Image (cartoon, helix red, strand yellow):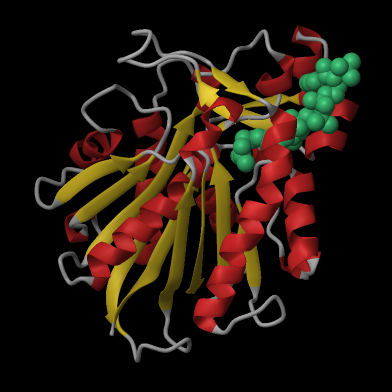
Length: 323
Ligand code: ACO
């Protein structure tokens, strides 16, 4: 059975760090409030003129270097973002051009915070079908550009960044001992639009718009949706909270992560947390956290890793892979 293994991982964060204290000087909030409610201590913010495709390019280059591959080895780019450089062409094609790739295909997927899980799922299926050999899967965002900086209920939550993995076709036995992506589960329910959305777009207002969120409503749905798709991943593979090595959740909010881990019986020692340093970077958060734990030596080759995300739409999903 054809599987897609993660040949390399990389990430990039803009240089500028904005602390909670800096936000508290600009709006009515406090380090205490932000930390207690979300676990966030700081976030990175892109420089003026630094676009989503620029962040994505740096993450992609790091992932290629980690894999020991060059851009010419890649025949598919799937990029998840809700903050593209332009309405069109896709941010993926900008990254493709910057990497000097003129073969294969590149396209974006839109699933907001679940974007990386969606992009990983799509690329895995392209590889499993035999149509592509090596894919760059990228999550990249500049959420600072769609925040209403006058709205303290949302402005304190998000940050900018990018993460990427290289997926490569390998032959497996078709069971849970294989290396690579072992299962993916995607869900969505568009009835929840008003709870988390951007109030602009080309076909409605003709503007970019700002992020709007009913935080409590999102929180209320998050834990149940996340645990549902993780139960699906466990059922499909035979793995459990006890037998996975690592849980790399979407980094939206420490309280959502802790509540989900508790409900599933996943001990916090297995949970990779970067929300304190990165804030919520939407589609970039999982590959950023995964890369951090690979680089610091926690996640090793052969480890079984569970990822999940939930975001605007609502969209949600999980993936389970052996690294
Ligand atoms: N600083 C200080 N006070 C604030 C701030 C702030 N930044 N923001 C809101 N408050 C105030 C409110 O005005 C309110 O004041 P009031 O009681 O006088 O009316 C009080 O704090 C409590 O507000 P709530 O919204 O009820 O606070 P809550 O405990 O629900 O926390 C939060 C808000 C952190 C947004 C929470 O609801 C949450 O985490 N929701 C999940 C949303 C999320 O993570 N979304 C990310 C995108 S989706 C995803 O990635 C899964």
